[in-house]
Image (cartoon, rainbow over all chains, first blue to last red):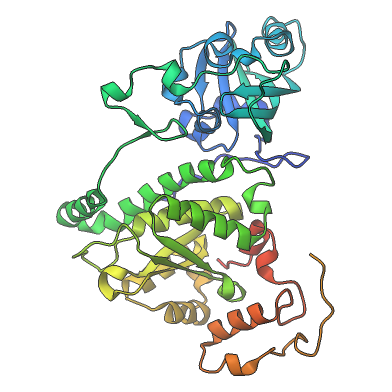
Length: 361
Length: 62
């Protein structure tokens, strides 16, 4: 398996905030769209006239707008009219026109949405050598909708920005993400197709797909609208309970994190009612996508690469699926153990006896 | 969270109600005793699962 590229570098702010920004804000222009979408804070790239050039996933989720539908709109007049003020647009204008010196400018602001207001901290960044400007947007506090004289014109909802979508067969969830109503058998069909045409790749494709989906899930988890610290700074038991709750609400089954084996250098994850369990998987394990998703979440929390491997699947045992979490350097070893049908206890024993760390790629 | 003073039952290495733990695997026993002992783990330190997630996951080897 090819090693996956590392996630983009994100560093915590000097003071507590819900989201984080890049260590070197000017480097944000170097990130491609996929990397921008992995950042857990809002990023909007503007031309000097306010036209939106780039709009990342986190901002789309927090503003409840589909990024693909706002690119090309004017940020100040079409998408965020609450920013068409001297305090915001005036600063931007001065910065974009070169009347404000420096590579970046920071200020606090309140965004008005129809679903609530948000206290934000803005970092306005000049792209090096190009007439582009980035808004890095840290959410500091989520507030009720403002209705008093201090309220500004609220941002439009997705349905107002792009009317008539449902008539064109476009479904969206409450965060304006486009969704598809599909039966869970879609996964079964995909698994069967992989088993038929590329059986050796089922694990690789499923796991990589899950990792990509998990990186999106991380954005959702970190922008869930609950004030407080980043997930990685919250108590482990609260964090895993929150993750389990979100996965349950998504229909991913009941994911239980067993933290009792941390002293042995591993974690155990149990999944009841996994939607990925299908009949007739070639090696009896079906939940590689879910393992990849959980791995992405744990990577984010740990700030390093871990590996989640399914050891036992309900597809072949009727028992809840069982997964093991190890460090990246134990990945190859634990994959071998899983393919050999090792139980969790046997796998942990083999890792301890075999000094799994030394078997790293 | 305020740390209660160790009592006889909570003293490191002791189990509050050992009869509840019979027949359990070592992992279940450790987990159950952790629950029984509340905020105090075997070594008298705060339970690990109250650590920040990043610090907790630093224990994962490899």
